[in-house]
Image 1 (spheres, rainbow, N blue to C red):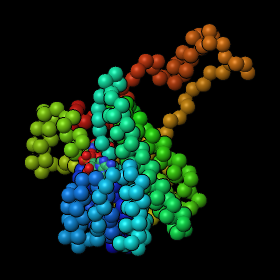
Image 2 (cartoon, rainbow, N blue to C red; image 1 turned 180 degrees about the vertical axis):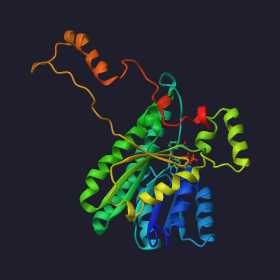
Image 3 (tube, rainbow, N blue to C red; image 1 turned 120 degrees about the horizontal axis):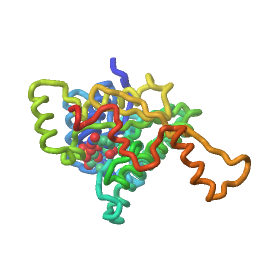
Image 4 (cartoon, rainbow, N blue to C red; image 1 turned 135 degrees about the horizontal axis):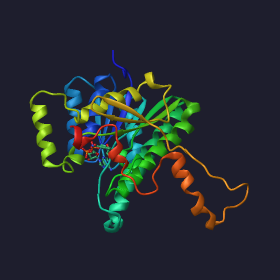
Length: 305
Ligand SMILES: NC(=O)c1ccc[n+]([C@@H]2O[C@H](COP(=O)([O-])OP(=O)(O)OC[C@H]3O[C@@H](n4cnc5c(N)ncnc54)[C@H](O)[C@@H]3O)[C@@H](O)[C@H]2O)c1
């Protein structure tokens, strides 16, 4: 018995990395999987791996930010496996540059793949669930780069913070129909992140894995939470953003107002603001200047691992 016995799940960007792990875990938990992937060979290989292990899977190649492809994912789930129960939006790319050097193309490509690549499959899935009067689960992929900010990633961070907001609003809209929507902010060593790590870190990591220690950064570590969020066991959980890496599952608090100054029922005069704004910083403990929120993460990739 698995958490997803008899269920049908679409995983986008499932040809490698985190998405591959999610597709394999959903299959291991009993689901039939639509392996959605831009790189057709990689997608076919994962679908074959699932079938060879006794599972049910079909590869669907194409760009998930293309409406025809996104719609086809849902119709493929229904035509191949009879229904759709969950959608995992995972496909993504990086084009890191600091803002002054960021090209129009690198901005557009990242925003398109992440935001449009989440919007289109989610719209198709929600339309299907509403028409079929069925419950459903959406899991979207945000990032600490969006929730906290990360140097050189205005495009990616903006997209990922947008995904967290998108997911929260899908949750609000889906609540009456039994449609849940949650987001994850994962961390793993994959093609996307490996090149960003210093050689010293990679050597240390490879040595600890060779020594048989738990691989904290294996992309497969993300999948158990995602399989759970695709299942009816999580039907009471929606609109949340979870951090996930290694053996850790965290919950993020949404943006929350933590201090206020008011002006006695009158419109503010800009000249009065300098004398009052510091009240916000002293009441909240938030510093006035730019902060590196990544440095305050519960675990530090480079310091501890
Ligand atoms: N690896 C991390 O530490 C990390 C951290 C935060 C967020 N993420 C997010 O997790 C997700 C998976 O990342 P990963 O690290 O496994 O990366 P990856 O590069 O290993 O895998 C991403 C997969 O998505 C596919 N893809 C990209 N654009 C696509 C498109 N338009 N249509 C269909 N498929 C497409 C790629 O071909 C690739 O197979 C991404 O959304 C990424 O932003 C990863």
